[in-house]
Length: 89
Image (tube, rainbow, N blue to C red; front, side, top):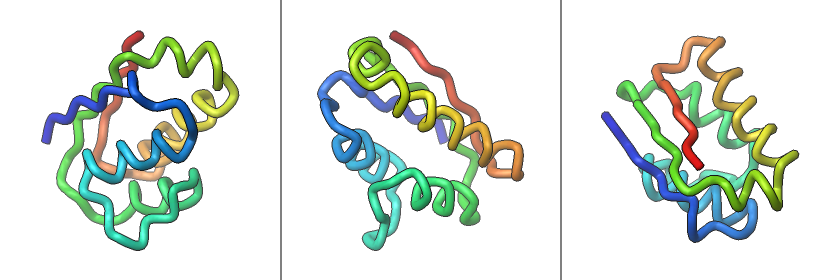
């Protein structure tokens, strides 16, 4: 499944997780944090080809969190999650 997640409206970490939950149909119990994200990414799911757009403001204002977010996706890929990501300003 190809998914584009527009992060242009996100201002907080919770906003980012809300967009992830909605766009990728995460379960209701999703915990809105990086540990919960990692767990959900490792759950069985169809292949996700995810493009993140309008990220520049978050890289400027929340650089450390964005690095951690990207690392969480990369760690899940290394562990065998069926996904690919691209990040666009």
